[in-house]
Image (tube, rainbow, N blue to C red; front, side, top):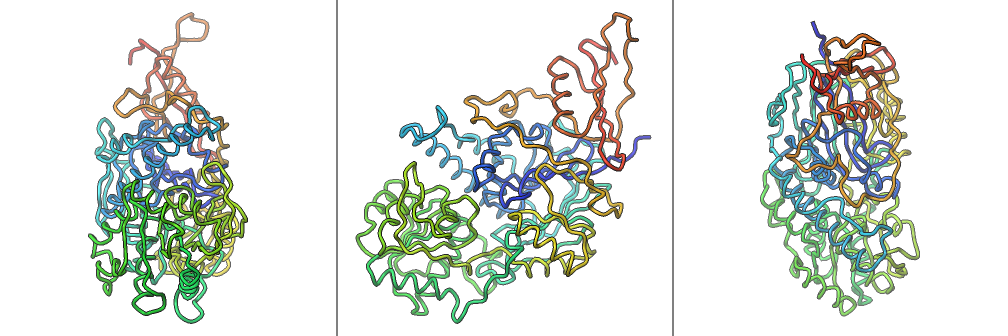
Amino acid sequence: MASTPSTTLTFLGAAGTVTGSKFMVTVGSRRVLVDAGMFQGEKEWRLKNWDEFPVDPATISDVVLTHAHMDHVGYLPALARNGFDGPIWCTQGTRELAEIVMRDAAKLQELEAEDANERGYSKHAPALPLYTTEDVEDLLPQFVALEYDTDFELTGNERPGFTASPDETVTIRLTRAGHILGSASVNLWTPTASALFSGDLGRHDHPVLRPRDTPLGAPTVLIESTYGDREHPEPDGLPHEGFADVIRRTIERGGSVVIPAFAIDRTEVVLKTISDLEREGRIPDVPVFVNSPMGVRALRVYQSHPDELRPDLRPEDFVKVPDLTTVESPEDSKRLTAKEGHGPAVIISSSGMATGGRVLHHLEALLPDPKNAVILTGYQGVGTRGRQLSEGADKVKINGKYVPVRAEIYHDHEFSVHADGSDLLDWLKELEPRPQTVYCVHGEKDSAANLAARIKRELGVNAVVPAYGEVVLLDTDGAPAADRIVKAPVPAPDRGRPPAEPSPRRRRRGQARAAAPAPAAAAPAASGASRGSGEAPRYKLITGLNDADFERKVNDALREGYELQGPPSVAYDGKDIVVAQVLMAPGGSH
């Protein structure tokens, strides 16, 4: 009788870096991906967006999303473009915001590729987007909205043409995380394992949203560590006084303030702050422009979900700014840019780290003049323009040319909606049952390492900073994490320039595909012609570690016409997961 398949977890992103969240849970033939984020920031990580995905996307049965920021949903259209056609599970808020985020990202990539080709500043000819607006539209029907605090059994039968055995059933529960609207922590259970994914955790006092709830505990917990090595400073005096000071000074000298802000949540919080400051008389009434189509659409989503907002906040409180203008069309955006320098104004525009979007045009126009100011309002990733400005750069590269930085730069850390180190420990302390192993993810190396050390020191819980590509065993056996690492990190593939044409693996959904193997309970015994008989063997047996090399060998055999004979067998010898796959030769008989 076949044994119940083991459950493994593969860290395909947000390991050793903040961005690119992708965590793959494998049980039998099921592959469930928690988040599908895009890498951002340093070029080394951004190039991974163009790498061939470590497993065939067509073999992923489900995606579960924690929230709708780019570093958690931005890779989804590329995943689907390359073959993923399963359901995407998330809250209704995440579903609505993810649609906005992905459409904006695709359009931005198309425009940047077009601009690079016209102006000739790309190293690639032609420059191409990672995915298109058409890819996003094709993907949207795969979203399925779920309620908070309810268990949902993912049998695998939700996906056409895919059938999972009862031993491969996955159950999930979403719990309010208080980071952005719709954000959730994810409990995930298989027949052999239980894990909790924190997602991005909000602060206990989010200015707009209801506070986070406490999810059920689990033996294995993945916790974000964006601010794992620091504490948010308590304001000296009134909240956001530095923010107000910069606006007052800039208006007095006749300049404008540009605020790079994440379109999702940060734009809403900044508007609420400006509204409060004007109402309290701490800044004068000044023209405020929201030049972010995505930010404007996200604002409407926030206003349409009063159940997600703080009980003491009314939806209309966001827009109590006397002189507020929302800018949506490209023509209006160009007119606004042309007006810059002709009178004081506050301009809120994305992206929040100044990696792209309309904010670049405002920075290009405003940075050279010392009467202007730039206010950064949150985390600025390594390698981003926002980080460069925060660290005092005297010039930044925008649209292929260097722009001098003479404007006043101010970084207001009070806007962060990520939990700090103490907040993260408080969240862990609330979990019942107590975790056995905590993996610190979604943080720069020092931040994750410091949080892991603090968890060990203050909670006495084993804490690990995983490596990109690392695979661990999730089966609930009480073994410490050091003994549960079953495969070394997968080395990053060689990175050349982005392909001019989609590779054979980059199939449109609906085209024929070969299912790559995943660990499962058992496979039939291999048989074939005796050696030296002169007959072609009826069966091929492929064995190896559960890694990309094993999958390549199986895919090579499938291209030769071999057919899978059931799922592969898997064995765990205390060090490695060893997999065996039986395939039948072309024309063979069962």
